[in-house]
Length: 423
Ligand code: SF4
Image (tube, rainbow, N blue to C red; front, side, top):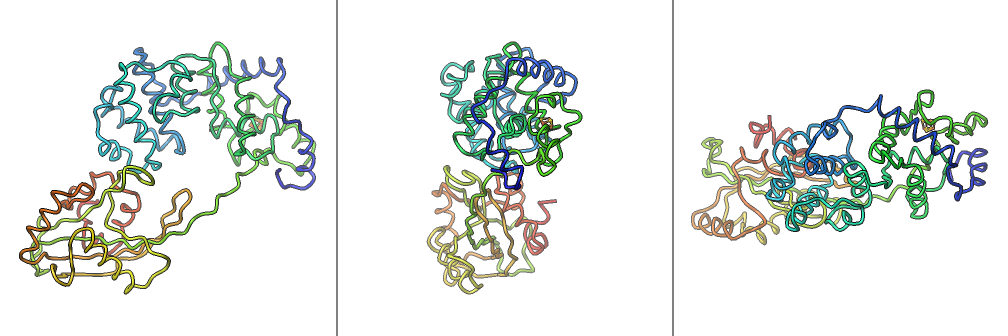
């Protein structure tokens, strides 16, 4: 329930079972399609494309990119992606690393991996896109939303699509104040969207509904006076008769998941050929990067060596843990096998993931490998699959986690370590 006193109490009486009437449905279909025809934004994935496979591929890539990401951000990523992998077949030959590099900055990297795995799967099974929601759902990484979008937009299957924009529009049209994340309410939104979808132009209708939510029925500032379906909007009607209630009270704001607080000590580890700092040349410097596991948070991306801490920790404790980590994972003993050329706390900052608040303590550690250690280290590097030493110039072209990018911008690193390659 929306907690706004009188208005919220009134909403308890709204019948969750009621559907749109036949007249409402017909009127809204005509109004929305007409509005969409005149107001649709020209976006690269909407450009005319005669080849059905290419068209479907573009819809798929764009819909996946648009999940959790703003249209303006997606445009550039989409154009670069299509330039590099213009068809499903091109994408199916890419590596996870290339895909992650292309995706870097968009977040939720699982989406990129699913696109790649889905492309490989479709190509392995003949290279033709499945055309219905039922068959699309069998493709790795394609869920109900993406399947509905592809099937309706590319193949005109009469199925609904429900994203955050559609939830908002329908919640307002029907004045549904129940928690939109609740599974019963979610089911209800899909049912109502299925009722509305136009049987002749399902793709345009679905895009129109999403576009309406994105551009008119916005979260905080809806333009009800220019809304093509305002005649059927219950939230608008209620707000006109009850000044304590606003259309923006719908849908109920999601219940926030409690964030986990994590702490990490990151070591920007640089290996230099010369132990005399004044003699170090840019070409003689390498950084150690570690690949994250292929599953889970930020899967497959590269980052500097890091250790998870139990909580806030002082410099001495952090160094102790980092040294132990370097010994166990790279065979580097900074007292015995390396000479520390430079070691400095580089700063601390907070990086927010959807459900984790990660506090990062960063340190720059520059070492020179002692005599026999050099060969041993190179041997270990050749055998390792999850880490490598790279020239500083190579770093920007790798698929990096966004916290690494943030880290590279800290003053000390900009100045000392990699500033010359991150401009
Ligand atoms: Fe949204 Fe206003 Fe249109 Fe209702 S009338 S659907 S609140 S923009």
